[in-house]
Image 1 (spheres, rainbow, N blue to C red):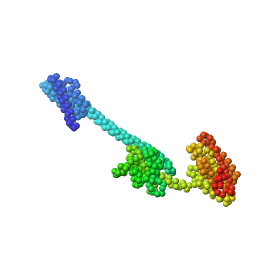
Image 2 (spheres, rainbow, N blue to C red):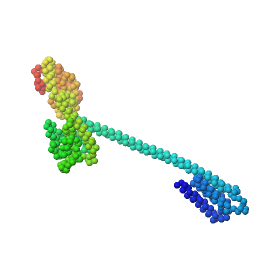
Image 3 (spheres, rainbow, N blue to C red):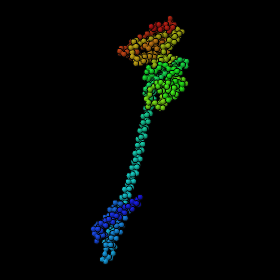
Image 4 (tube, rainbow, N blue to C red):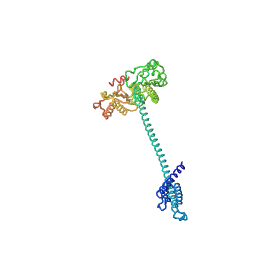
Length: 459
């Protein structure tokens, strides 16, 4: 390809030189070799071609011009007057033309080489810069992805923390409403219900509505898993796994499917279904296998929480302590009083019982009741010994104290001390009126043989 281009260039140069010679011949037929012209046209053409094309073209143009010059000179010279055309005046122009054009061509060629090397270096640098820019772009993308992953992990941790707060409950009545809120907040569920298995010892398959979101009269209060028209409910109870509309296989089942439930998931505890979660309304784009997986995980979490809540409910029946106030329950108070009466009679030791009542406690807001009771229970515990007994009264406004080895006078003094301690807290009702306290101290006498006798004395 390059040789063909060089050939075309030589042909073009030859045509230019011949055309120049022809034009001068037409204008001056007596001087076709253009003797006496300064600078000589062939000289100018060779220099221009050398400066434009480079060394190879300069060699061709100068030698071709020289050859044509001597041919024209040979035809023009009268050898009768001139012995030879090799004289200095005839050969100085072609020799200088060849030398200077080749020198200019070489300079041009070096310029081309240097320019090529510079372009090569620039190209290499551009390639390196492009490569570095690509690497920077890749690095920026990786940094962006890493930031996104970190943000996603943070969001995931926040989501898990939020779910954990909702499901870390010992009370079943709080557990199910929280779970429905979690479904709505984290899965986009817009309608759901939870049915809890009947506490009947008979395996009758009956489930009662524990909670619905949003509440609707369409939710049946009770469902029999063996005879219900809700196909998904029945399948979830039978298979003990998540079922969706895809599991409605036969035509009869599809016709019986009331379209009220789109997903049913059993809550399995100890191999038995204790509750069933029904999803009634969920956005179309959320109805995906990923959502099903998340729902299964949440229900498994709910199963464990339900098991803990059921265990706690069973254990709490036998507990004598109130978890919130850290004092004894009222039923234990009577047992303990009977024991203390026996001990006092056996060893002939004094025994006092104190009753602390808050008057008009119902006027206190529900928000303040628990903190106020906590303050009063802490005061009672602080004012008594480990051997003494602090317990709940018959209602939320009463506290009962059993204080062994405390005589009648000591009981009166104790009553005054505890009253002074309580007044330091300035407890008020909703009208900002200070609460009144009725504190009674009863010294157990020999005629008090039963706990009921003591309670009558405290009236």
